[in-house]
Length: 221
Image (tube, rainbow, N blue to C red; front, side):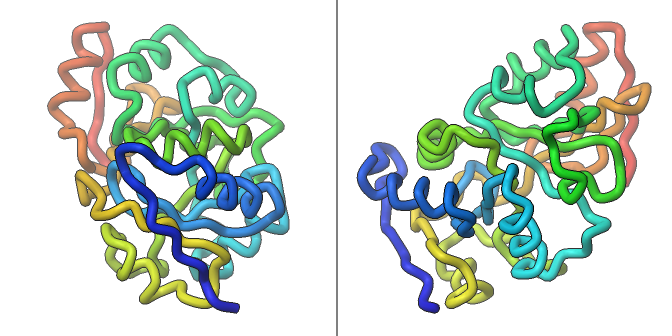
């Protein structure tokens, strides 16, 4: 299998090109695409076979969770048990953007994505190609960074292809990712909230936001 590469305008994505990516995702395929942080490798989050293939291609341990990307904050409602006022505030402030939030998952989310836990990570990326694709596909898209496990995250399409040429169905070339660093991961399942992975949003910015609402925050790893 040869991986097809589509060059798409990062500011005005060509809908006809993205239609091909949508069809691939809906039919259990894997698509690499740019986000605001790094390139992601996506699969239909509701397709168990596609998810297993995603783990295999990535060489990712089943004990490590994979997040779900959504096109807006309303799309997380079927995926999580509760959308609290705090969650609404955080998504209103930091989405679209490089903040992944860990929440208690609903029954709709495959255990494969939870890594043996009862939670799931969700994010809305600030990238026009990614957002347009997510809106068009109309499904939650399980997305992990488009690199083999343990390797540096890809910020350009050539880095994606170095790992996945011939292994994935489609790669979208949308130029270099704007931020070039992975998202900050904030766990809201625990109390006080815990920053599991420092990333594009500094911990101090999240701390200031939560402190103004009477919440503390811890930084862990």
